[in-house]
Image 1 (cartoon, rainbow, N blue to C red):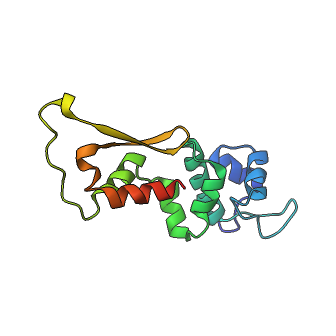
Image 2: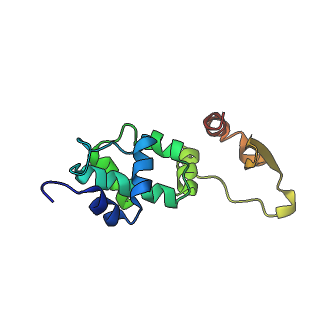
Length: 150
């Protein structure tokens, strides 16, 4: 659309009420249109940013975190986020932290009874479990993860 979307057209594209769109603008998640009133128009960048917001909301990401994630993104990055192209799972992200430049761990011990696990509380309700025989090898990465939750 060359002249952009009306507020109704934009919300219809994404499947949200107009009220929700206005809330996102008020919360700083989405920039407002260039003008005010009935003739206000929203562009392609509004549509992709709104789709990215909706994707993150569906993943139960808090609005404050969504605002932070979107803060410095360019249009191409927002479009990739809206398409879900750069959304690693939490497990994949943690594994990438643990395995960055670290050789694969040895096979697990023969006897599960011999395993000792250490619990590290990152926040109330969020814990990191680390097997004691690999704790030293990943000490620097574990500290990085703990700092993320400080």
